[in-house]
Length: 395
Length: 67
Image 1 (tube, rainbow over the protein chains, first blue to last red):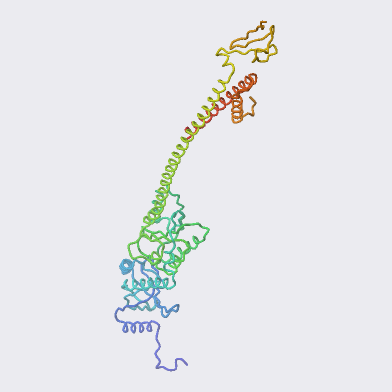
Image 2: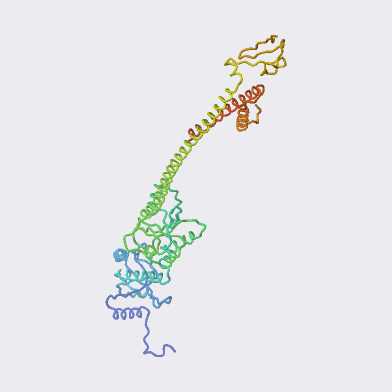
């Protein structure tokens, strides 16, 4: 029987809670420092109080879990200091070191009242994660892989991963547009989140879309800027950095911040601080090709002009020789011909007649060379230079 | 002159005629005929020569203009 032993004390819940509270406060009278990971973070919009689930994990196993609370009065100061020093939003997934005391409430149970957070601890943890990412990429021989991809000499077809409304994207587009007349850029925007914990998946998803060879891009530009510099640790994330390393096209980054380079910027084929600088870098490459082509064109013109001039004078020279040759040809033939002509003229019997000689023919028209060939009474005719004399031979 | 006659043929014939004309024994009848023929040949050759010269001159002048 349960109630047989009258010496046994029976507690009410509130008495039990009271005892527990007393025991806890006696055991932990002061504030203490705790390190834990923020598994969940809820801000109550009306009150502004912040409720957290704090965990300690070993690998995937949860070793301990406790609730925490930051009162609205403390939160704004804590958050401001935290974000100023870590440049990371106070968010789920971060490991924090905080000053707390136990709070036990008879109805709500045990929770930790957090009155302060030490940002340098989180900063240390984040840089440890960043170092781990770098070391792992180096060990896997991935770190320099995208850097080894050459930026094409004509980077015109550009896949831009950015937020459509971000100032960085607008700056980039503005510089490109100014030079659109000379160079035919093809800019395609792949909208993505570029800060905070959703950024990793968002950027990776767009990268896998661009990755297809048929997309035909020359390079990928990851561009951001104009916003605050909080929440860039997504660019230290191993999965994202690995995707950049393995990406088949050169990746160019212009993330726009003044703090240390993120891992993504370190592994990218080309990194410029701002989107504007990225745009000018691409333009400089195009200008270089343009100038080189202009120089080639100029020297081709010069060569052609020289070539034509040289050959033209050659031709003129040949033409001169040809004229000379022709003139010799014709004058020699003309003088030969006129020589022959005068020879013929001198042999012409008419020419002899003109000097007063005459030719006499008998009645049969035979030329007479012997006087005994005619008899008295024969009709003869004598041809002179001008005209003919007909006569009869005297007896 | 027959159409197919060329300068070279004409010149050959002309020199042959002149060689014959220089022969003292040639009869006057033949002489007159030969002289007539020689004169024809000379006119033909002269014309051909002048026309060719003009043609060549024209071609060479045309080259200068083209250049």
